[in-house]
Length: 229
Image (cartoon, rainbow, N blue to C red):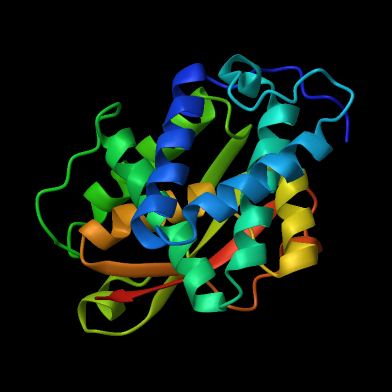
């Protein structure tokens, strides 16, 4: 992969640390110290020879390649200690929920209680999330195709769908590596959108058959299934 020329927003990097370590503390307090120690070892190996072994030097994480290696190391260490698929997925969801709470304070997103019928507001909130993540350089671009979404079906308790397309996310290499080695990946933006839908009383998630290894970085497509909670 060619070296990415942009830098991540420093505020986003701080939010990443808050969300990741907060989720770890909340869900796996008994494993936290072991996971963090293992993460430190993996990360130092990933950046060996680059003068970046000091994990507390947060100034370097705006570099997309270093951020990618940090994210890989964190999730790889987590995966070594947590083997259960459901617990792994719940961890990514918890990070997404942390992130969403932070993003709500930085955007025009507002939730007025669970209301799956408010379709335009749902679309607006997802659009705001995408705009925010693009602005902080998490990805080059993303969009939701609502063509297959059936509002009436959702309102009547059925399952409907949309397609979420992501272009060049900063964690593409680490996500592919984790997916190949562990069968799951970080899914930051996916889980943030999932958290937003949850506040509208909607359960939304990428299909189980989604396989990141089938996609190039500039055209990652997730087909989502949505239903009322």
